[in-house]
Image (cartoon, rainbow, N blue to C red; front, side, top):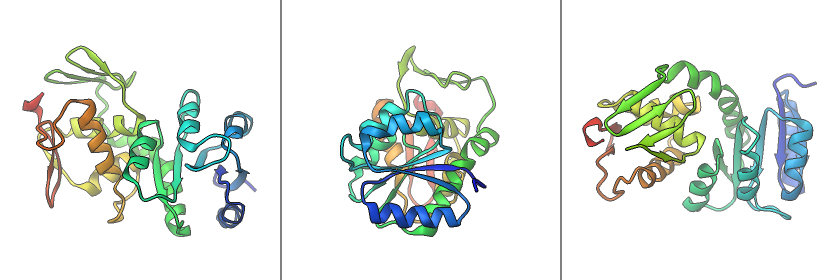
Length: 234
């Protein structure tokens, strides 16, 4: 019975897919499993799942390429699964539109928590982020209706995850926000002490807004406290 939502699990390891599917079924979700990357788009259009768990390493087509294609029409959460502890995987995954990522080996409770948080995210993001139509700070303009980002009149192409982060920081410009506050506002969950996705997104954002990663002026990391969006730097 589909109590809590439909999940499409894309994983080429059949034994892993089976036990993850069984676990999530026990938790009340309807599970569909796909083992090949080149079959995902068709399955998503057919099933219209509430969330996708997408492995990076897949036969037929890799998860990064699949995620990029999905984001042209699919707006619900995508959680990337990766066995490689490589920051570049995280950066690329988040840049092409992944909502979150989780490292293998998969811990069942941690995966369940990420799924629940991702499914809550649209509601929580809407209630916690600024409701202003336009946020204007110096040369930065954020249109909260279209989600367009302009810097000195130039359109900046950013992912959904990057937008949520930039929006939250800009809405709290001039104030240090804790890592936990950022996680709650943009991901709908508390910081677990290990997740580096916000650091990855901060790094990606700095590149796109031309903020020197070695000596950032626009988005600063305040060690031991969190992050500071500096309005005077724009």
